[in-house]
Image (cartoon, rainbow, N blue to C red; front, side, top):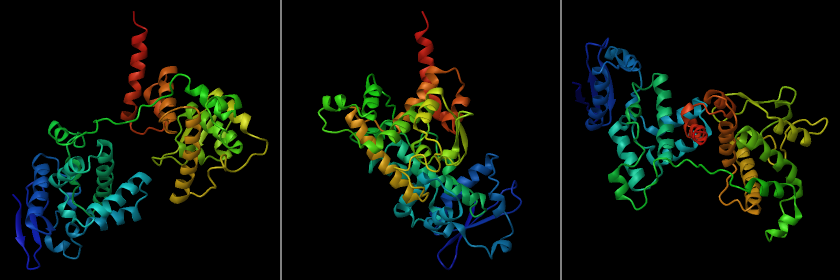
Amino acid sequence: MATFRTRSSGTVEACIRRKTLPGPIYLTFPNEPEARAYCAQAEALIDAGNVPHELLEFAKPKDARRDKPEPMMAPLSDAIREYLAGYHATDGDTQWLNVLLSEIGSRAIGEITVQWAMELVRGYKLEKNLTPATIRHRIGALRRCLDWHVTMGRLPMNPLKLLPTRYASYNDAEAAAVDDAPPAVNDRDRRLEEGEEDRIRKVLAGDRDYIKSVGAERGIRPESLGQMTLLFELAIETAMRMREMFTLTWDQIDLDRRTIFLDRTKNGDSRQVPLSTVAVAVIKDYFTTGSKGIVFPLFWNGDTSKLGLRRASSRLSGRWRAVAALAKCDDLHFHDLRHEATSRLFERTTMTDIQISRITGHRDPRMLRRYSNLRASDLADRLW
């Protein structure tokens, strides 16, 4: 069992000793309760034979570590800022970590235990009524931040890795304690309904008869028609993300090989997207001889800063909302077209999940599970 000593400064020094370690582990915490909670987790892992490799860095003679900073005393805000400055975090993680900076940034690293995290999650549920997906985004961003610090040798272990699998889901007691508990799975599954694709095409074609039939005085701006049409067709034919499309340049498109090379993806990986004959035909209709540079200059001016990309997303989203409203497609977001395209790949092809994930850019195969159900349903329809 770990031993604890209160220093004259008021901080607590914890020492973990185990035969399986090359030496005692010395850590410093703001107070004894936090020290005991953190060490209990570390000892449980060691006794189970799962010694975190990172702990070995801290299993050194005490004198050898005197000149090193005490990581458990540092505020979480420092760890988050160091991570954002030293690592290329995704835009999503950056957004959530900035939220956490104001919420829990003053906490000391030593306070970040499984018990503390579970209480934080409980507060997210009972006080803020956040969805499980939102909770996973927040905790996941923090876990990746701490993982980086562990890899860099600044922390002995990451307690958030010990959270139970379904920590973000509402249990029966939590669901009963709030008026309207969010579902455990709240992924959007909106698809194009019957007639919607046809109406969207009429809007994008500037069909005056249709525009009048829905009681509108005018359609979308004429200068938008060509670029919005190409964006719509690419979305349902390739399953590309909105940002992947509006940042396209003509040199990324190879019509001879029927591919688009993406070097700006959400998860940081590059990939090649194959083009269907329909997509190739639409691109050829839009392409003019000598076309260079940005494919969709109406929405993006080449600014790759976070602000520039957000502004482009906002412009495109606003124009899409106008199209959806005229097409009478209630609650149809542009990102829903990616879901539609991925669903069609499962319904209309015999490609494997791995092959489809290479097209769509889903790095985690588990993200494709809900689409796999479509194939099972299709097979069931063929049974007698």
